[in-house]
Image 1 (cartoon, rainbow, N blue to C red):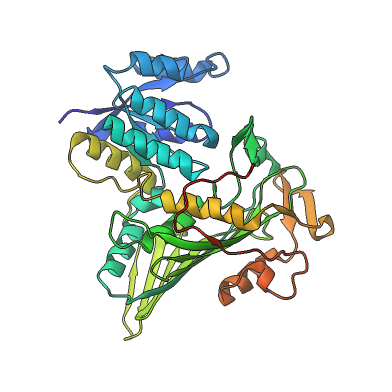
Image 2: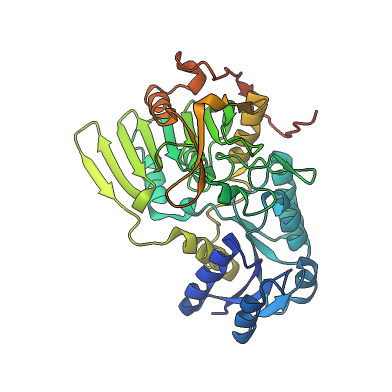
Length: 409
């Protein structure tokens, strides 16, 4: 078996996790890190020396990698900024490489469609790094649903409470931005930090192991509590698939207390509860049967690389996560912005900004935890809770034939 050569663009932030995962996976004999793009080799001099000592080629630009790395690189990993995903993936495929692209795949559905068009034209593939689509629990849950054991899926709901400090928004030029250098970013919680959990729900509602559900309509509310960012940091969404399943999503970066994502899947024959932390899953069927499972020790972050390598080696026919089966996720995000029309600033007298005990500058929206819990329990958006006078009602957007998102029109 030949080893698949991987290149990674970047060495900092999430790119560092790519390098770490590939280093650990090399012992399995399927893949090898062979090249890295490091633009600022002075600032990253120590890392450059370490990589060169291991025999890894260093390139100063993406363009030079594309031109000169064909003898050693098969798949290029792109843990890069959100607004560059589509352009860099397309350039890479046209240059003759397969692509492993970090989530979210692209800010707009038309960019995602351009990636799929390039796949067909070049015969190359793009795998998307939504790691939970590669996890045992999500795939087992989907198989359980496809076997009809949960009956007809009526609704899927998820919520998550992750504080994001000023250091998070200061880590790069596009964090917390809706637009950066004239390009859409849409760096809100639904499109970035919590993107996995929206994508999970849409995937689980799909009609086979390769497909996500097609969406009929979307309604969403986008709010901002942080005083120094422009994107949303507190968001909720409801959607309906073309087969009638309802999807509900509630996420915040300004909670009073950190809580990891939790998902409920409700069918006519029972309910599934999934916890992101340790991927604990509990299935309770109407006949009294209770099934519990976890991820069986599989690291889904590393499975992303294994599946891309297996596809390249011809060991599997289908990638797990692709531009095609993440298209509905992108449609949901674009439809959410169309529905909300604008990001609503929350009155600052309801917001606390302070330096916490860890020395991080933190923003908290008072009582948001209880509001999200109530909205989740009642399957309502925040504006549907009568006591929330800062919330704004929004309109349903039909997305059945959605082909373009343009907030500048």
